[in-house]
Length: 279
Image (cartoon, rainbow, N blue to C red; front, side, top):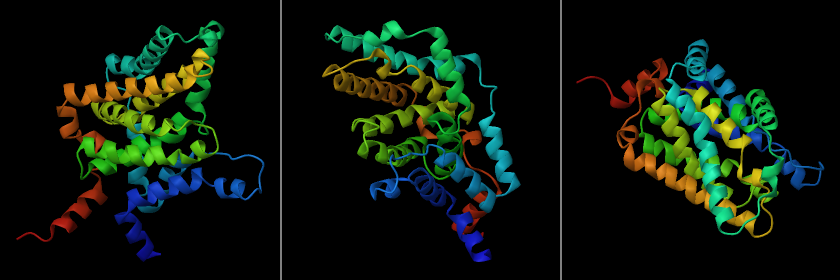
């Protein structure tokens, strides 16, 4: 056990990613063998993995640092507006362009503010849904570890690959279209940018994710060829937004704020070990 504990402390990020995949993909091989009627993808994987790895490798101090990032709410009203409205703007631009290209949007007539607010509220507190299942893990735990030794740009690219392929079972079993993988990759840059610009606030990325899943491209009710075209347009729009943050806010991609980087006792000890004894 001491040897395992020491190994885990030095490989927290790898352990977190592997465990996230294992938990979320748990039913995939069982379903593939025909031993269960449906494939249940478990979005709670990253949240559960973070709880387990922090508990085994860091203990109370790790939970305290993680908890502070999750509830960090003093970020300024502008960032609340960004977190809540930017996802809707991306969808509105996508829908408008598709409609201008001749698409019909029958789903818009069925949308109500009450319905959208109910969906938003339920998703916000449901750990079996994307926002609460993913954000405390992928952004709240993985990003600070990635940024301990990498730039935000490198960290976003690495996390984008991990998160995109984490959704692979949904592609294989029809829950998500193939273009969902590159879209997930590029939107990860927006999540990391928001996380860093708010001093490592998981709450902001949670609101962003929740807003992204409340009013979606699917809300328009596009059918036939209009549907895949809308998904392609959405990918282009999200990629353009991510590229805009990289080009127009370059300082945000050079270095991360201390609050968004893992600078706890474990990281300081590992960094000293890696650099060797003082001369």
